Every structure is written in C-alpha cells, then in structure tokens.
Image (cartoon, rainbow, N blue to C red; front, side):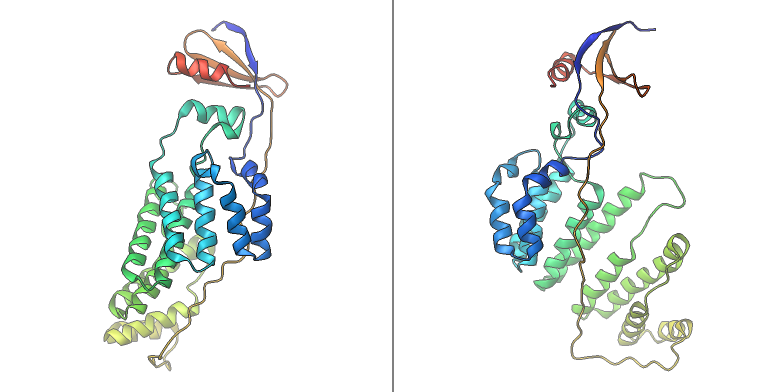
Length: 308
C-alpha cells in the first residue's frame, strides 16, 4: 500500500453547485430588475459588470445579455451574444486539474462552460430570434444544429429509455416552413413530430400528440396535395368531418413561463494528501470518503498545492 505523506493543505468544500450560485448573488441587481420587468435597467445592471465578459462566468454573461436583448426585441444583437455563448461552450477545452479542484474545493476555480441543456436553449432562442426577423432559412439552420446537438448527447447514453428525439424541434421547423409557405416540408416536419410522440413520448412519458399538431398535419397534407396521406391521418385522428381552410393569417404563441432555478451548495470538507508517484488523495475521515486523483506533471501538483 502506498505511503501517505504529510497533508499539503486543508481543502475548502466539495460542492455540487457550478459557478452559477456565486454568479447569481453578484448579479442581484440584474435579477431584481429583470423580474420586475424593467429590461433597460436590467441590461444596464448586467453590462455594468462587464468583467464577467472575459472571466470564468463568460458563458453566463453572454447568455443573459442574449436573453434580455431578445425580450427587448433586439433580435440581431441578441443572436450575436447567443452565438458567442454557443461557440464558447463548444470550443472551451477543459483544464482538468482545475476541473477536479472545482469539485473538491471551490466551484469558482474553473470556467463555467454551460450545461448541455443550456447549449440547446441557446440554439432555440437563436431560432426564435431569426423567426421573428423573418429570416426563415437561418432559423432552420439553428433547428438543425439543435437536432445534431441532441443526437450527440443521445449517443453518450446506452439505455433504451434515453431521450433520443425532440418533438418540439420538429414542430418548430414545421412552423417555420409554414411561414415560408413551404407546405411540403412543413408536412414532413409535423409528421416527424407526430411520430416522436407516438414512438417515444407515449412510451416514456405517457404523452400523446397535441390536437393542434393533428390539425397542422392535416392542413399541410391537404395544401400540398397529399390527399392519400390526408385521408389516412383524418381517419386515424377521428376527424372525418374536418375540412382544411387556408387562413389569411395565424397566431403562434410561445409562452416562456418562469425562471430557471438557482443552484445551491452542499459542502464536505476534504484534506488533500500526497502519495507516492503522481497520485494525490482527497480524504474525509469522518464520513469515510476518499478519492484518488492522478496528476499529469509537476505543474499540476504545484497548482493543486497552491489552493487555499
């Protein structure tokens, strides 16, 4: 068994929170104004702390700017921030010694690159912004990026019960195609969404396709001249008496309700011990916990021992 050398330092806390908790408290004025609905003051409060633009909370700074600008109707500026946030999350290369230090000492040691669902939301908001600007092709590009990103996440997991496909993305694509009066592709997108409800959501969540999706599928089939498909789905939905009518305009209402939760800390004290070779050991004797970690080089050891 390897010999345990003297303790290098008493570590701070093992935390299950990311950089978000501390960032949230430093942004109290922004959060307050945003919740009040005073978007101009919220944006001013956010941009007063522009040190976050180049710090460890860069992702959060960019996303919050993008969100506020989107709600304010400044869609082009919003998408500039969202794209920077997405590229930052995709391109950021982890510093693994800082990553382990962040888990076992202080979450502010590492850069917050955003979580998987946050990357997806960035692309969703970009698609909505383009849709509102009537830049339909660009909106579809963001939807395709969403699909690709979701598939990459799905490939990480082997469970047959995993979340593989998203019906809302395909519904959104159908809405965009319909706005372009490309009813054939709108029908395909709505049909894909319906199949996801039938094949995935019914089994995983006991959810069936919403009624509006059924009507959208029938309408676009009829407008495209796909009468065989129209008759098939009309019978399947039990809507034999329904006759599509092409309206002069339609209202599509997206309801974004509430704010995301704030992450909270749960802490455990650890001592860091050196071992022979490149290993270090994080120990909490009271709880019987210990975790071994291998350092790549002397620089890693020096940086770890410098944590206070």
